[in-house]
Length: 326
Ligand code: F6P
Image (cartoon, rainbow, N blue to C red; front, side):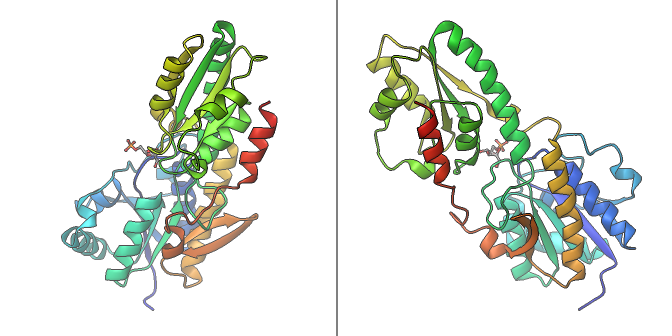
């Protein structure tokens, strides 16, 4: 195995709070062990276009508390093509980069897996996404901050729901996973959550009306995952139509869920995993994601980390919400 002297780092896919803390950790951990570090801007897209700059300890000063990513990010279509991957490989070699650390979600890790299958290049992944939909880690970098942001938003919306005696359907992010929706519903004391993992019944409306929207409550909050399986618009419209006495509103939280200063939990997770990425390289690990399970740093092959449905939602959370929303 060739000796690693220079490590490249990039962020790709949707930005997540804590990505900066991860970049800082990777950079400083690598430098303190004698490696050179190069930052690749705009993810795989920037790699294809050779947007590479050396990073020093100072380059990553003062970024820990900032949301987003100082390296910028992109969702690269070109990297999915053989031509794009070849160009990326040529640029890595030309820049003298011998190993790559990628920080991102499912798409980023899948891209890394495919690249590593084609080219014999050491890559380590870090899970950076608000969705928390990655196997091999209990939490992804960004999830906790986003969850707290959603909780604060719902707390505010509850003031209006209470004052106007309304039913609010609140759509939250998560792509095809209900981690943000289910957890934020518990944290904010919502009456119900609609998540893709629990869409067993095609029509859950009567259940909501019976359970969440009771006579003894003059307002209700239903958190709805953005997954197409859930349909915040569909349900809010139906309640409006079928229960004209209820005052119904739909609120879509959108990208404000992805921004903002990361929580201490996300900063610590990102720092530990960033150091873990350098540990992984030094331990001869290749094509694995570094995650945290039961308070231990663990390495999971990309093939497992990116497996669809590989990280099941804890069904106990569904029971907890139901039991507490009476
Ligand atoms: O994967 C993170 C995420 O925020 C998802 O929750 C959401 O579906 C998607 O990214 C939105 O992506 P974009 O910012 O590209 O619209």
